[in-house]
Structures are given as C-alpha cells and as structure tokens.
Length: 271
Image 1: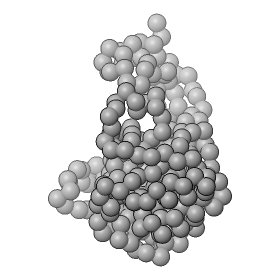
Image 2: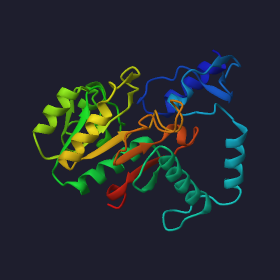
Image 3: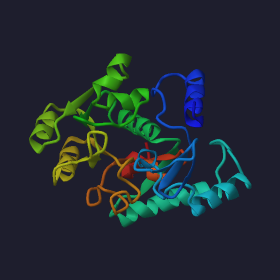
C-alpha cells in the first residue's frame, strides 16, 4: 500500500464521511502545484475551490502569517488590533474604487457562508417578515441559514425544514418583475457569476434591473461576491457599476486562510 493510500485510510478511520474519501493526501504546495504523500506533483486547477488566489506558499502570505502569530494571536471581539482596522479600511477603499457613493462598513467572519448568515440577519432587521428571493441554481453556503438560499436539493432537502422560506426566481428580468410584483420583498440575493451552477454569468443588465426593483420596493440588494470578488474577474468586484446594499466576500480575501466579510452600504451598514 502506498503512503498516499495509507494516509487516506487513516483519514477515513478518524473523520466523518461528510465529503467522502479524499482523492489524495497532499503534503505540500508551491505556486500552482501540489505534491501528494508519494511525492507525485499535480497542477492545482482547483485552488482550494477558488480560494488560493496567490497560489500555495506565497512568500507575502507566509511572511504576514508568521509575523502576526509571532506578535499577537486571537484576541476575541472585545478588542481590536492594527491589522484588523487596516483590513476594514482597505475594504472600504476597495468599495470606493468600485464606485460606491454611500459609505460602507465591514463585519468580519471566518468564512463565506458566515458572511451570508450575517447578510441574512441584516435582511431580517431591515424588513422583519419580508419575503426573501434568490436565483435558481444559486449556491450561497452550507450552514443552516445560507443553505436556505442555495438551490441544490441534493445538499439541502435532507436537512428540511430549514430556517425560513426563500423563493427561487429564474434569472430573467421578466421573472424578477413577477416576483417583486407579489409585494413585501425584503431582499434578493444574487451572484454576478453563478459558480457552482457551472460558471454562469448573469444576463447583461440583470443586476441593474434588480437594483431598480429593490429601490422601488424598499428591498435590499445583496450581492454574493464570495467567489467573484477581490480580483477574481480582473476587477475588485465583478458587480462593479451596480451598488448593492450588502456584499459578501471571502475566498480570495484570505488567500487560503479562513476569513470572510459582510459589507453593508449606507443604512444597511448601520443595522
């Protein structure tokens, strides 16, 4: 039995079968390559599922992590630190560069799905009891609240009933019009490019159309930029040109380390 197979067997004895058996036991990475436990090299086309924006073991990330761990570790939310404040200000700068006219404020999380959970809480505070819309084929995370926004029966139906009701709408202007015509919409969640659905960009103009519908209905436009944000499409935000009320970020934001952000614009950042 190879070293790779031995490690996978040990994994299966130690961990729940949540994701199935690992395909490989990886031992190290450098740039765009990873090596398994038998020393075989692979070109990494997954990037930690769109997370490792700078590849593996990038010296800037390694240096930053080493310096921080050697200076100050976890401090809870009772306190703040210089890197935390600087990151919040940098995110504000990103939104200003992307055309946001309203000031934005940041809430940091450990992951993208937690950022979506935070966005859901903002929506509930904005219009308690209001209808929440999402697009068909959407994926917004696997925690309980985010799962309600995810249109994948294979990963959600077994956990029903979920936390609240979400109405799924086909990504067309006509279908959005019909959904908003029902009244009492609290928010609509949208991905500029639906990654889990097969990398499907939204039709041109649909985000702008949703912005206008939200303005008329007093609803929040929530744009999920977890996969597309932080330079993934060649600009800071794939939704550039459309100002959302709430934007969720993660993946490329940490370059492989667990961090996410829920960004609220204007009144949504004060709830």
